[in-house]
Image 1 (cartoon, rainbow, N blue to C red):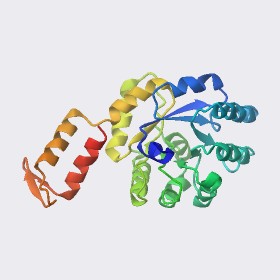
Image 2 (image 1 turned 120 degrees about the horizontal axis):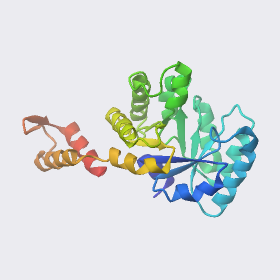
Image 3 (image 1 turned 180 degrees about the vertical axis):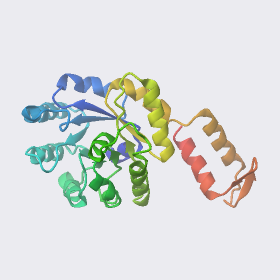
Image 4 (image 1 turned 120 degrees about the vertical axis):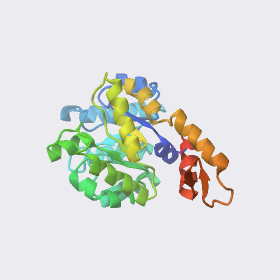
Amino acid sequence: MTTHRLLASARSFLFVPGNRPDRFDKAAAAGADVVVVDLEDAVAPAEKDDAREHLRVWLRAGSTAMVRINGRDTPWYDADLALVAEFGAAVMVAKAEDPAELRRIADLHGGLAMLPLVETAVGVRASTAICATPGVVRCAFGSMDLATELGIDPCDREALLWARSALVMASAAASIAPPVDGVTTALRDEDTLTADVRYARRLGMTGKLCIHPSQVRPVHTALAPSAAELDWARRILDLARPDGSAAGVDGQMVDAPIVERARRILACS
């Protein structure tokens, strides 16, 4: 599977701090679809250069990961870009706001796959242009940073509803994969994690940022279609008219959009 296809279909993105090379292999073995080595928020300034070298050694050994790089306004940005260009690694762009910056990154190494992390008010407002930038496979929602900027509780789903929906709309308009939802900080509360994932899925998000290996399995379970959804989808496809014209199934009008939804549900099973 190509990097672009993997990122587009991934359900779980598991962060591991770049200054903890002892955890790299553990993260890779946790079952997440994508491992994200974090050179940004998880690493103190004094450890940035060492973290980058730890990652370089791991990638040279044949490992694969997405890399969350430091922001353009930091002294580590250019060195981080050189690293991802060296290995052709997929890039998570922190605090993405500027499509021109994304185009510059996309041109490195003959075209790097990008997942911009939209976590500021400027980024949300620019999300349509961000998602339409060549090289952007899908976007992710940085709920914690945005909530801090807005002065709201990051656990307040209603307060962040508009921002999440804006990313879903921007992704659909750009014909890229649906967005990835932000982290759930309750590490040992599987019920809260599951509820968060199901809520994001209702809005049209199809992935989740994870901060602990224990979150991976519940995320995959919550993003999978339920038995009732699969039964409904199979019945729709069994009874839909071959020419795509409208038909009635169990008292419900079934036309082309309904049939397409049924196909997408089965494709996720």
